[in-house]
Image (cartoon, rainbow, N blue to C red; front, top):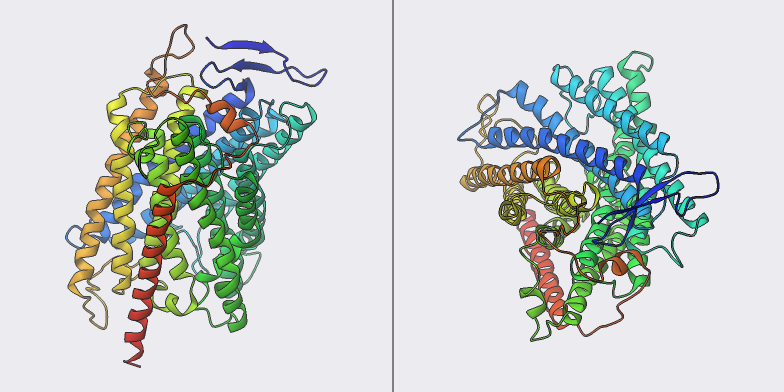
Length: 576
């Protein structure tokens, strides 16, 4: 049964209502609970809207279907990017920040009124952006490069949304101060909270970059600024556009650790090593935005070489560390749980029927093998010329943001609903299948887009056949095959997305109540989950044969794919 504690752990003169979750033992403050709920619900709403738009985009790029006319295609593409790359993800990340601070540390949420102000501003900004796009005068796509000009309401909506998100991040940092001052935890913050701190720090840089470029662009749209330099816009905008995806990376890696801890009792192999990997994100990940600018003549060769040949690989190393430590922590925990036979009993006997674990592990694998490897290829100056401004680029970030981040956030939702909404997951059979259907669909989208991009398919063009072009051009038959398979994969991902939304909404509204005596979760947590997620401590074992084999497979795939692209590039040199 949930218990209520009045004023526990609060500073003198401050009232705070807590309940103790009997499934995790974590103390949940009322304000934090409400704000996690509303931000998570808003996130799911914008995921649904953006997902429908994404399906329409994929069915239009499928030459055999070509669903939308050109004008509507670019409108829907703009809305798709804003809703899934910004609104769904950042609303959910604010919920993650509140969970990783107030709930994991057992503290009260700092300044709840500012947290509500944050939510209202974000909701107003997201609603205004959709209004600006749907009225038809802001079809500038996600990047909105000048000299294309959107409605003033489009730029203003993003500024309002960014201000709201920044306030939410400040509330998160304030909650950390409150937790430290009121001594709600001992020693260092746990790794999950440390990962959230990383996301928060990168968010400040990202939102500052957005303000620096979007405010003058807004003034340009209302006539107070006469011109926006396109190169300057691209450089500063990608300081926001690419870095916003690094918030995602930090947040979903923290979620990997959190789900591993709560579901199988996994502790980090080494707190210090994992924290160093997060620190490398703060120092170097933003510099990876250089790969969007490698074809720009205004950027010096020195700048390009330093960023792509040195700095970017320091960020990549951080992800590779997590790619070892997350499955390593799971293997160590599973072996401690008794699954010690052979190299892979820990993996075959893992709770694959639990959608939180299945979604997390699929996210880990696809983020590494699809998003990570392709990101390094795109970030290599010489290889970038093969894929720059082709559909390979959105293929890459569908591997990172959809197969990686979105799937991890979906997995975390299967824990948020019972622990924060106090409702159990309804229709567990549907929930078990959902991560696989969405994950394989999202992975297919990424792979088929990258295949089409390697064959030269343009990143944003409405018509693959270029029917009305002044100069006719015919792509290789494989390009048509890839875009058709991309459409099929998009339908599969959309089905998985619908399953997720229906299960989550139905669970919140009508799921079995968990605040009653004797209630049990249909997907149980590990007995040591609370200690693993909320306390500082390392596993400290290196006897991980299964993880070593998996990492070996990853590096083999990495080297082979890298070699194939260099071979492809060398063959192109013969024609010039």
